[in-house]
Length: 362
Picture 1 (cartoon, rainbow, N blue to C red):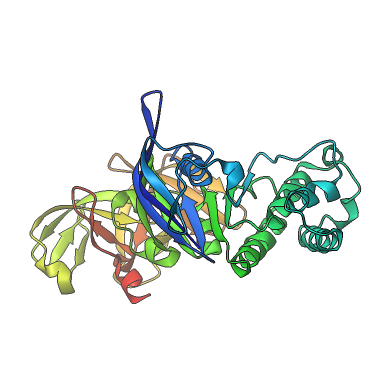
Picture 2: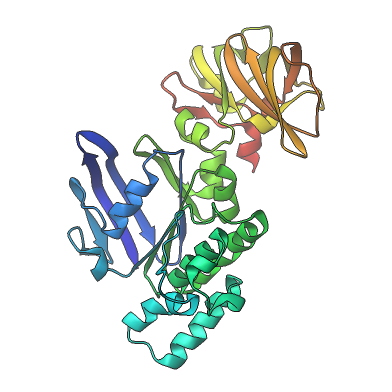
């Protein structure tokens, strides 16, 4: 099975929700749509499902043009963050409903319902109505119904957002395996880079209605094609600073510099942008050769085992994610350190010209 989008776009009341997009997804693959709120993830999924018709372009399923085909006539299952169940049916009947429409036998329905209910930890609640369940249990009911539908295309729009942490971790590992074993095309929308990395497979990064990059998830993370993709695939977003290349060095404007090697030496002298992820900033110099920057601490956020430090560096806003709980005085100077191995270099137009050396070695 394959799903191919060819020049697909969507415009609503003069506003472009999806710019012309080419994308091809293969059977048995997990494909993550990663981007911030309003990036176009849901709009793209609605086009894939047939809920919306594109303004331009064509959609092909196994080589057949299905651009105008109704969603009811496609093998599609969808689960949203806002769970949808049939309130008058029991949990058992909610899960069984897709198979009954497909004409499955009572024995087949019972076996599949019990298997899905066990995975979603719904077995004790099969005789209850959805409104008697908690929000997380209702979402699990909707997920279980998608599991048993035998769909060729499974679209999950931030489906785990309402679940507790432990169950999210379990389902992130289990759900993709189930759909992949069935040979389905699995599409999962999220705003969280960490979730994309945990899910693996392929990732398409979205920004303002454009797919900026699509490929194997580790490859997109380590080798973003441009600064926009790097910003999307980093939480908090990647930090940036204007730099200047002169000879075999890149200068950071406040006395710090990075010695270049390899293909970087062939780059023309001039202005570039350096980028680095928040988790690579440190408040203690752990390695020899780390670059040091003086910044002003504006905000701290303690997450339990880590601390976000929000910084003002020469008017640029940076964020660092440092291990441990740190009680740091706000508004005071703070020296921070950065290993040059973690620095990406982008051209002034945003295109990547050199990935970080740690990414090259990975």
